[in-house]
Amino acid sequence: MRDPRLPNMPGTSMLKDAALTALVAAALGIFIVGFRTVDVGSRTGLAFDYHFADLGVAIVVIFLGRLGLSLAAMGLRWPAIALGVAMIAAGASPMKLPSGFLHWFVALGGVLLVIRAVWPWADQAIHAAARTPTGRVVDKIGTEWVGRGLGWVLLGLAVVMPFTPFADQKTMDLGVLILTYVMLGWGLNIVVGLAGLLDLGYVAFYAVGAYAYALLSTQHGLGFWAVLPLAGMFAATFGILLGFPVLRLRGDYLAIVTLGFGEIIRLVIINWYDFTNGPAGIGSIPGPTLFGAVFAETAPAGGQTVSEMLGIPFHGIHRLIFLYYIILLLALVTNIFTQRMRRLPVGRAWEALREDETACKALGINPTNTKLTAFAVGAMFAGFAGSFFAAKQRFISPESFTFIESAIILSIVVLGGMGSQIGVVLAAVLLIGLPEWFRELGNYRMLAFGLAMVLIMVYRPRGLIGHREPSIRLHPVASGGSG
Image (cartoon, rainbow, N blue to C red):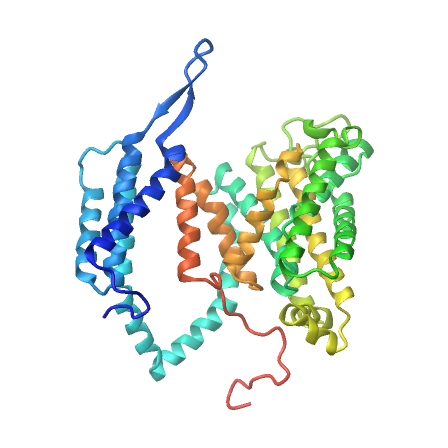
């Protein structure tokens, strides 16, 4: 049956629509896929390496895919399925394509087209099954499992991950990176997801925490564990300073001011050379220690290495495992703190402010204090994460705290589901892990990243976990009967 929301589209219109889509893809992809610069030697310098054949195959796949989507939208599912199967067969065949990755690209396009063509049938069957008594029970159990069981499963996997056979240095480093963004996402979720304050300058607090640890450790000799709470306090102070100018702002105006605040912090770091070392950054930052022992092959003067303390051979992965459990612990503290705060009056005030600021005032809630606490608490966790980032990298510069970082963190919160803690974890794994896992594909990995975001926005517009239970109920529902 044809989708009634779509107008009639004759064959000529479908071809024009597919051709226009392919043309737009060609205009956008010519600079990403069509050619790139390569170093051909010290004398010649840079030269262009053209890949127009790859671009041509991609354009043809996009044209056929758009045509198939139009057929499926008009109810012509069998022609769309046949076109998708043909694309899968072409991708799986041993025919010569310009690039090995294009086989996967053609096959993936066919798979997505077949899924889109059969989706209405599957969707109707799922909804019909959900309306049965058994379906309602399964749906209730599934919702509770996503809300509770999935979190424990992810936590168990995170705890045992360093002891699995595939836990090499690359995997551990990626795990540390993902957990760092999980912690940042949970911190921003307080400001955006709970309080409803759109913050585009969250990376500024991340930078404050990182530079606080870098300066205090290199110039004053303070250790990681001593600076960690100080970094959170400094970042929370900056969060309050940001909160005061934006007390009367909402929506887009609030986003613009927070964006400007993030750029101000970055420019101050670049230009205050005597204090921050400017664009050159700060190096030789000491890492965290374990009971005073350092993770190094040789001990410093008067010190001891972890290998000597534990009596085990030195291995570079030991430091990554230690950093992994530190950021896992910090992330769990962030999650537990947020869950407890949501059940306190201040947490309910955040959610009331998000829903309706005018009604919030009418209820006697002070919006000034509510906004300031949201900014301060969210900034505090960004400061913790920044301090850990500086200790892990051992070198920081203003290039690590650009606007794109704020955009990525905000994307994690939005794609995960506003206010959803589990959703932030899933979105961080997807948005941070996906580009890293596909790094071998070069420029094509960003196509995978963009495709994942488009699919989430189309099929899950409220986020991966769009549904969540209220933070508190006035009348708890009885488990056994009506209540």
